[in-house]
Image (cartoon, rainbow over all chains, first blue to last red):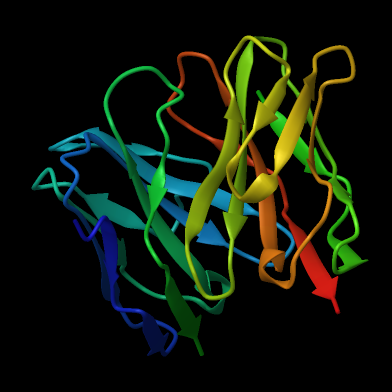
Length: 114
Length: 113
């Protein structure tokens, strides 16, 4: 099993450009999450999904959109990138059930917005 | 709402010395508690978790943590650290029945030879 994979690993954008980050998991997990990691702020939840076709806002959703068309994939979109979105983005997944199921994380995508 | 405070942003220690990374949480309801480790240029992986039962929880790589309900703390300890323990450590909390983890700010552990 590859676990959780993220594409791309690195990206540089100019202000106003758009892009999509892809997260894929092969563990048949129902829940998927997108986080951003900034120095001194830990991980903050952007959006999450509790199943195919469903998404919900997290702590910092503004400027991002997501889609979960297939159970194994969770896409994070930036329609008009801003320098404040420079960050490391992590995807995670977990199984359906009680809240203490472990979240498995991808290796991250480092995004720089100039 | 839950919140997590990691009291030290950086902790430098010498190899083979003991270490404690501090974590305090606030919540008005019952929670589960976690420690995650992030090695350089990698994602997070679970180190240990407290769900219920014994307040002393043992994890991977010789780490352990103690849940203290009265002090709302969940400090991480290791009696003797190794160079390979150099990483960033995150404490996290989740309300029972919820799906969203809340992370602390992280503590960067640096091991000096």
